[in-house]
Every structure is written in C-alpha cells, then in structure tokens.
Image: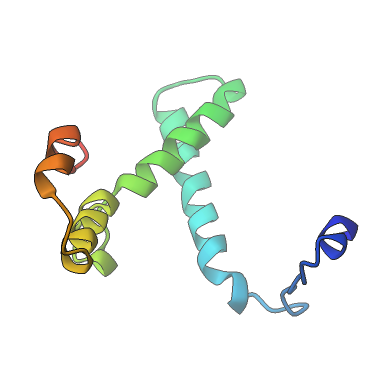
Amino acid sequence: MIWAEEEGIELERSPTYTHEPNGGSEAAGKQIVKKALKMRLGANLPEELWPEATQAAAHLLGMTPARRNGWLSPNEKLYSWFRQHFRWYDPELVTKHLVDLRPD
C-alpha cells in the first residue's frame, strides 16, 4: 500500500461488508476451485497436486465457450473482434499461425 502511494497510485477498496463489487471475481474463483476439486477427485490424484489442478481448471474455464459470448470461445471472440475493428487486419496471417481457434 505504501508502494502504491509512492508511485502515485490511488487504491480504491471495496466497501466493507458488501459483496456486489467483487461478485464476478468471487464467482469465477469459486467456479475454478470447484472444478479443480472435482477434477482432482475424479482422477484420484493426491491432495498435493491441488496447484496443478487449479491451474488446469483456470485454463479450461478461460477456454470454455460462454453464453454471454454467443457460445464462442474467448479466442473466437477475439478473432471476430479484430475482424470487425481493423480494416488492415489480415485473417490469412492469423489463420496461418492459429489454424483452429476452437478449443478441443
């Protein structure tokens, strides 16, 4: 906190005893922890592997198509955004490097 003040950064904290400002991040965190636990237990992995299971769960959550994105994966959503907003955007260049944007 002192470092932030020295750098001229003003920290905005959430109001005490309110969950609304952090609702989205808390829900995502809960979803990641729940998915990691189920993955670890389903694979009969030892408890010591919880960091790897959590990292894998976060990656899978980030690659999963969502209703709010029209059931597109985040990569597909980014690709369509670039196509809409940049006239100089060359889809052949991207396609050459990222053949299929959909996750397995």
